[in-house]
Image 1 (cartoon, rainbow, N blue to C red):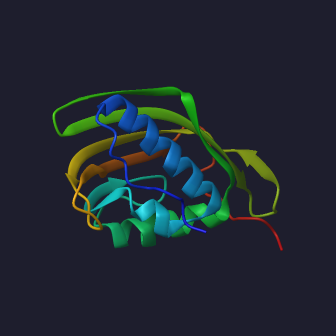
Image 2: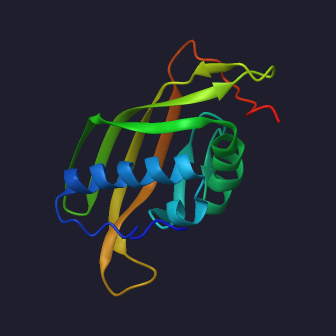
Length: 154
């Protein structure tokens, strides 16, 4: 079931960043691509733990989300670590996150990392109001973390 309300219309940029990270945390944990897509601009530019550089939401989902989200467990943004700022129609945020990865044998390992987002207030595609959408994201693993997760063994 999609996230109940993914439109981020909060006026305060820092509160918007916190809300964005909370929604993404939930969507990633549930492997809910549709709801996550609603908080990203269609022309997002991104890179991450798997994707080098991608431009466009479809490529982000294909080359980052689909290669990682089904192959991890327990993804969670550390909301206490979220820092952010902004002015006008631009906001930025950084955070730490955790997840569980899987070696090829199926054995688990801790998979911590950090993330960055730049949000822009834009007209929302499904309404007349404006909301915050990610125009750039970067998610990376902490140094020393195994770079590949293979998913649970069947």
